[in-house]
Figure 1 (cartoon, helix red, strand yellow):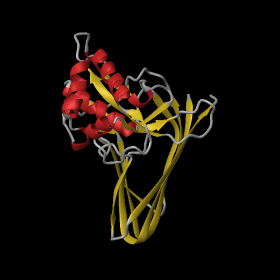
Figure 2 (cartoon, rainbow, N blue to C red; figure 1 turned 90 degrees about the vertical axis):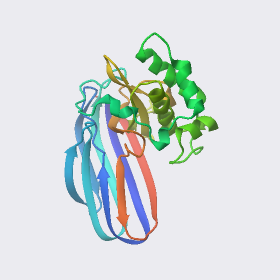
Figure 3 (tube, rainbow, N blue to C red; figure 1 turned 90 degrees about the horizontal axis):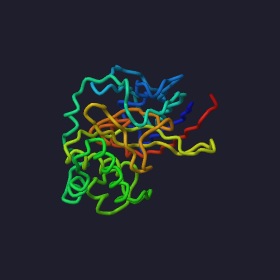
Figure 4 (cartoon, rainbow, N blue to C red; figure 1 turned 60 degrees about the horizontal axis):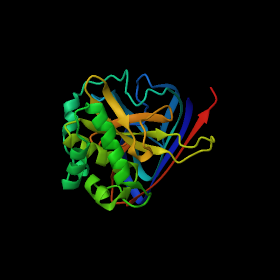
Length: 269
């Protein structure tokens, strides 16, 4: 499938700040399931800094905007050719050992309820089957409801509430998988979710679980599936904050407001 992306993030400050520094994970991952045809990231008045590929295989690009700064627009546009690999992250080069992703973070801390989800999914039919049961259990336990949670809602809180968004599904699955002894991580990217070819708000997130003998496998409880050719993978981390496509800091006292729009379209090949 050929997918085009138009992703705009606008930052506004109620009083000018002296400077803004950002770190971007906005370049699609390099693996067998996707090939970049063209890709551009622009930042209003931005000065590009150092760029590198980190140990998890993600491309990281630094940006600086010198002040006074009242607003910034980060725009991502491009075309990616995708292939359905049934969720398996095949051909992705990274050096971080999977065991790193057994580390618990604040958003993915497991309480008694999450431990119960993990215990119920255990079995003798192998880690892949366990991973599928965990994803199904999270999908059953947390109904998709935009606005029910916020950026700092934890996995335990979302499970107790019984509703949330893709971030909450991913965090809950990661927490339960780690309890089950399976390395798991948060993945940020895009999803083409409109089969009629109409632009769709499609910034998305899911989880990957490491299965011995197979590698990293993606699971998207919010859509009850593994990532296929409708998905574009950007980067990964221990949780949503660690995997954020844009991280940054503003030097000054101005309060920041944020507006994000994402459109993903499918093209005829």
